[in-house]
Amino acid sequence: MPTTLTLPLTIITGAGASESVGKQAKRLGATSALIVTDPGIAKIGYADKIARNLNDAGIASSCFSDVTPDPTLQNVRDGLKQYADEACDVIVSIGGGSAIDCGKGIAVKLTNDGDFADYMGVDKIPNPGAPLIAIPTTGGTGSEVSKVTVITDDLRSVKMMLSSPCLLAHVALVDPMLSLTTPPHLTAAVGVDALTHAIEAYISKRAQPITDALALKAIEMISGSLRQAWADGENIPARTDMMIGASIAGMAFSNSSVALVHGMSRPIGAYFHIHHGLSNSVLLRDVMEFSVVGAPARFADIASAMGEPIDGLSPMEQADAAVDAVERLVTDIQMPRLGEIGIDREKFEDVIEQMARDAIASGSPANNPRQATAEEIVALYRQCF
Image (tube, rainbow, N blue to C red; front, side, top):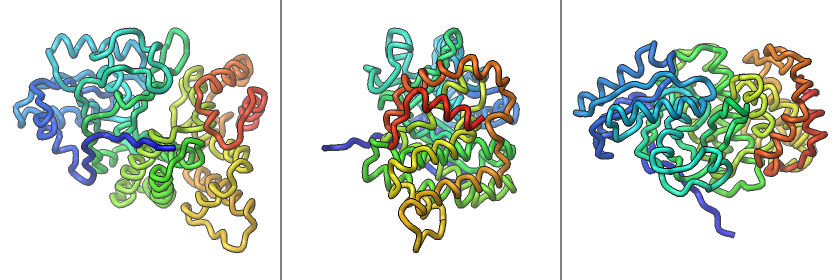
């Protein structure tokens, strides 16, 4: 059966890549840009730097810096208003996954009528979004190269996942120098998020030969550099591997999809407002242990990509080595357990069955090599806690 791979038309990587934003915006025919970012990125001056670069290319700009973690429908509405008020014709999103996802949401709403809920799921957006340049500042989500966005309906406490080529950025500028200011705890969270993307892309039932190659390379780069990037934020080789590895992982999962970890992670973020990378991290090890029997050869490949010595082991021992390698990694970078991130256990139990239903409804668990019932997902949540 034929498979399809969709990516941004232009991807520029390496130190200084972000400095080409003016040139790229001009190539897209822009005269006025809406810079979409979050308060933290605006505060450290990255948005101002982008504005200056755009100005040097003769492009006016306006900064929308109110994006929240886990961007909401209100963020998108506010960005749309500023885009119209300032007569913009291109969007430049700079920041982590939240800023880039919000930019995607704004871009696609500019060209499509209807409610966001109408577009939940896969390939339900009819028209490509407005011109978008995506510039990541953390080595994590891969949103700059993916055809996926997640927007939170804060009234319903639902994270709406949309997947469509119409969401792809026109240009991705992957500049590791922008990640040097990422603090250790965030480096760890987004790094595990990227690793989860790569692992789930590889074990997904929708994997294909090209995404397999991308996923294994991303696993190798991320697992080989995350400890160093966490320990020394100014380690430029490690930061470079993390940024490019996260983008490669984004290319992989965007085309093969994610699986059970992400399905279970989104409800934690929606109900308890936990950082997406952190909610992936607290689930990854236990969900891998649950899933490994469904695709032991694939998990053995993951162990090998992580540098584990698996020669001479039985097939299941080789597969289990991947679980052990992930457990050591998250321990080394001091990632907490689910019960250690401030979630009230009583509130958790109140919504745990609904979270399991939400996880299944997202569609991602259907890609897992071992299928999980709602009851098994509830048990996994409790095990992770």
